[in-house]
Picture 1 (cartoon, helix red, strand yellow):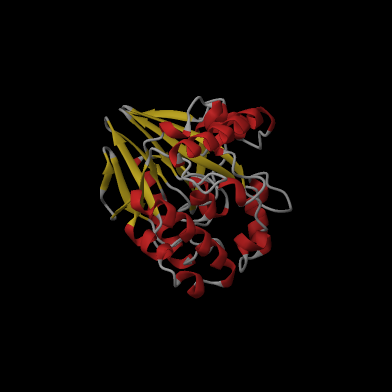
Picture 2 (cartoon, rainbow, N blue to C red; picture 1 turned 90 degrees about the horizontal axis):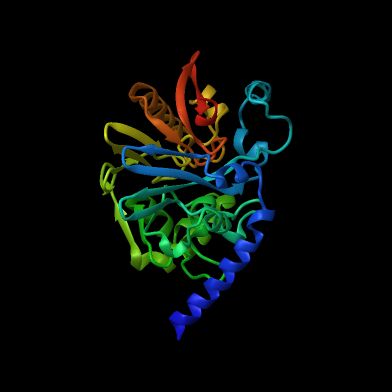
Length: 315
């Protein structure tokens, strides 16, 4: 009876989400749902799906930086005054008989502008039950909290879950909520609650491990203590799923060593960011970034003493 009840509740939520899909397109979401944000790497088919966007005060991102210098970079990218509203791109991979999601978006209880993944999946013709694997870059709300539905059941009911061991151990530790900074304590509580529900179906992995065929985990610590990126390789082509290791397309490209307020260890995050940017340029790897514009898929070029992100849509 419990299993049947879960299926019925999910059917209700799926129906509601499908009905809302055409009326809740946020900046960038319609473009992503239309399938334009996609590419093929060898025999891997990738697409980014929009979970909506975040609304972040500038002080959260740029505290301690010179405001005039930040404004100059932002204005060059056409970003005016007010909050920063980065997109949330969730990566979908189809490879052989696997359907893989990298992160799960924010879910229904984080920000009103986010949590759209379920409706976008339906619009793309994919049900949550068809997802075979969910791979997490890290445990922040906009990456983990969408793992559950409104009834606190796993949304991706047939999936296996994978997370880096360092990240898992940090957020699953019940002491983290009392030792992390006050503004992050609620995130720690929310992360652990969700992790407890999927714990028995979660596999932990190490840096450098091939977690699925053609997918290698790469440690990129700093944004969180165990943040992971993923290098995808097939038929001589390569791509990096960067998560939040490079969390914006403006300041962190132009001045990658500048500290960003959403990074838990800003100095370590800057080192990881610079290393990844150098690798992306040197190896001519494509990049998918969770909070990068126009679907988040593109390439990286050097520009002066820094870098720039070139979305695929303008190539």
